[in-house]
Image (cartoon, rainbow, N blue to C red; front, side, top):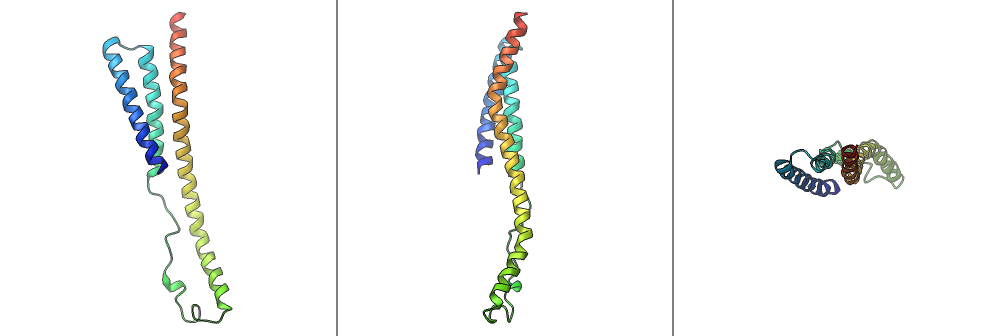
Length: 139
C-alpha cells in the first residue's frame, strides 16, 4: 500500500515538475529553473520506478499446505503424544516458506526505501541545481 500511494504522489509531482519546466522552456528557453525542475522531476521519476519494482509480484512461501500433510489417520486422531510431533512437522515445513517470504519482503522494503530517499533528495537537487547555475552565471 505504501508503494502504491507513494507511486501516485511521485507521478503527480513528476508531471507537475515536467509540465512547469516545459512551459518555462517554451517561453524562455533553457534556464537554470528549467534544468532544476527537470533534474528534480528525474529524481521523482526514478523513485516512482522503484515503487513499481516493489509492486511487482514476488515469490511468497506462505501459500498454505496440502491437507494431506496433517489429515492422516494416526496424526489428527492419534494419542496426545502425536500432537507435538505434528506441530513440529508443520513448523519445520513452513520455515522454508517463511524464509522465502521474508526475503521477498526485504527486497520490497529496500526498493520502497530507495524511492523514499530519492523523493527526499529531490528538493535538495532542485536547490543545488539552482545554486550551481547561479554560481556559474556569476563567473
